[in-house]
Image (cartoon, rainbow, N blue to C red; front, side):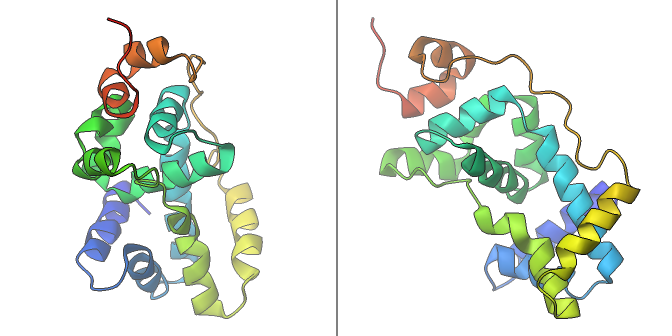
Length: 186
């Protein structure tokens, strides 16, 4: 599935009356199994592209901490935001401080904004609906990803740094730090 088609699927789901995850899964379940696997391949590539320390630091600030599992939910949530916000976050994760939901969540103390566990499973949900077997997707995905090398490789995580060092977080992600950290020393 090419990138433009992938983003069109997400855009169409946002215009649906169902929840976003349900709308994506419903659309995917109308496709052939190979197309669902191609969607998952594109989703995996997009998620892998943001598997970086600077993006993880943004998730850490927004989520008040961020485990491995939770970062997986965050990378899925970044994709679920749509092409514009995803591409902006790829270029500079600190731009998420401008997202209206992130700003509102910071004020409300909501640490779950952007984290979207359910979006991780839209392909498997759709595949199960289509073929009726909850394990079939994972078996098919193994075969598909083995046949399409590079579908699960990231581009490197970049420079690691200490997420608990408030000063470093302020330097690297100043806008998000301003939203999520108490003021530093004057």
